[in-house]
Length: 305
Image 1: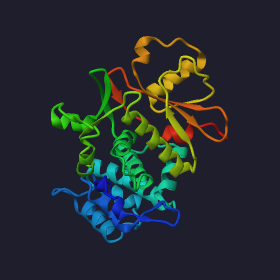
Image 2 (image 1 turned 180 degrees about the vertical axis):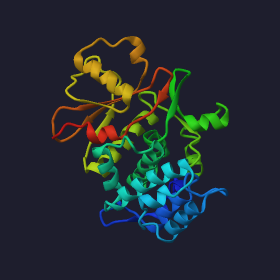
Image 3 (image 1 turned 90 degrees about the vertical axis):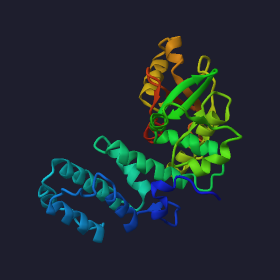
């Protein structure tokens, strides 16, 4: 089976008997190599000493005094964040358990970069063995902001960062170009057609089902829906802030204008064994055509049963 998302550090983790990811010293050391923590040439002696100590023992204590001794204010802030994040990981048996605890207890203080990295790692594990590049590309929406464009009537999602680096030119994933995904997966430079009835739209539903199965052990069927005009609406989950606002309006029975409908990027019907009523999933773009999916909403927004 071909590998993907090599740069996320999945190979630096171990896998437990339950198939979930275990933190290793090598995995923790990879964070120490990030530019936010790697001491620059002008770093003070205290910063160099702290970094060296953690390289020798990445599970070692990071005392408040050691951080306070750092001369650079940005370095102090970065190390405070690192200490909290690392201690969260070490307080749980697996990365998946750490992520669930983070989401359930509130992730407001966690930088999006670290949160997105955890999501990518967990998805890499959940999708291990997946041979469909469309599903893998769709899963990128969970942790990479997308910019949406209409191209010949198709709804195209392209990685925001990749667009900036390419000057706006980006390839769309097709059946013909799909084999290229494996060698390009860490570049995030292939766009996805999210049009209803297409491979990309269905693939995102498959990725959602894999996410729920891996983290919550839910066997869910996730089917694309064309519209909600005549559908019963017993429960919904907004997959982003705008999707939540649209769901709130539909729940109240408020009329949805064409402008709002035009911002809908994807709709799904999620069916579980319990409750019998379906759950609708709503993904929408912002007014400036940005798509910022919040996969944590899938974990906190489902019916209590």
